[in-house]
Amino acid sequence: MSRAPRRPPEERRAELAAAARDLALAEGLAAVTLRGVATRAGVTPALVAHYHPAMDQLVASAFTAVVAAELADLRRLLAGLADAEERIAALLRTLLDGTRDDVTLVWVEAWALGRRNEALAQAVRDQMDAWQALILAIVEEGAAGGRFAVDDPAQTAWQLLGMIDGLNAQALVRWGAGGERGPVLARAVEGLLGLRSGALA
Image (cartoon, rainbow, N blue to C red; front, side, top):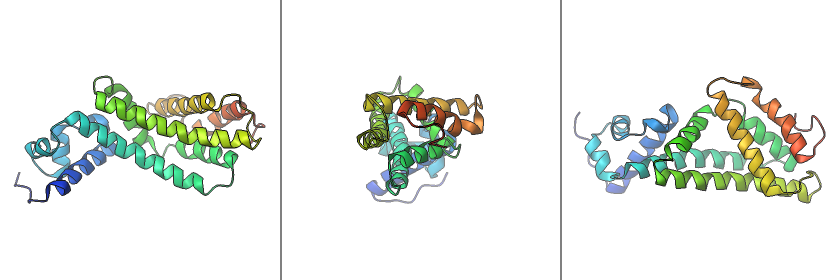
């Protein structure tokens, strides 16, 4: 491999972090290795090790970059909707339509790999907190406006997040409802939120 052109350290560090993020999306988080990132970036493994000596931290930052970008996308989408019911319906449609399975794979691998990578485990906890906060804000808004009938919005948000994660993880191995994930979960969520049948269809 020819020598990579010299670049300012911060630029090179950012380039390698971006390569790790892209690799995680394309091939999964387990592919984010010293050699994998080097190949993706077109540099030597020694150069990756020089700028990112702690691979656990690079894996964690790749995970965060992938899932935080998805969360930002969802925030923008939901901000333009009129009320909590519309936001919950849009959240289910968007997260369960099968177009984000690459991000789901990153999540599933992060839960497993985080058992032996504390930097990754902390990143997973932080991002799950951020996702629950997004859902909790919608549930609290709906409850305050009388649209949702829930006794414990925080518990409801936690349940809803777990249901979404579970169905998406099952879909990675094509088990269960497949492309019908959204409608299946919508019926359960209507009951969870005290909505009429078909409200989230």
